[in-house]
Image (tube, rainbow, N blue to C red; front, side):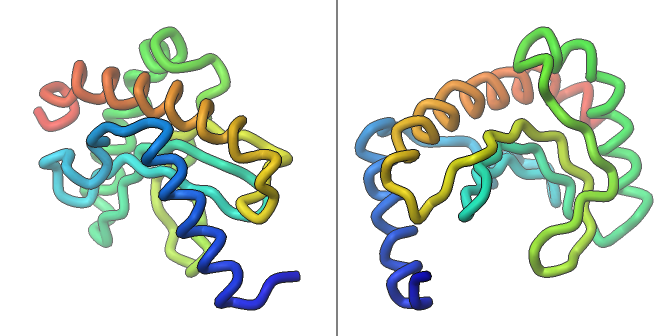
Length: 142
């Protein structure tokens, strides 16, 4: 078990090493679509790459989720057959969002032996997610 300070330091170290291993500017929050973001998530149980709709307005949340869901076949072909669509994903803070994501199990940010696997997972699948998102961005916003 790690203290909050130790855990924070390990997390910072992970992101510094990831940035050095894959030095590029990721799209992430710069989608130009309010409340629709691409995200990396890594905790003590799993790693994820995702497209999140975090709108507090249920109409916008449903609209964007349905647009993403209509692209499911494309996402499966262009990103991965394992992509998961969840319109009721609960974040650790309790907020419910719509999320399309890929997940890597049995990894931990506290276990440096799993970091290389996560670096590769993040790089491969976020690259695919960004490319696919940009390809369909105009459709998503129309």
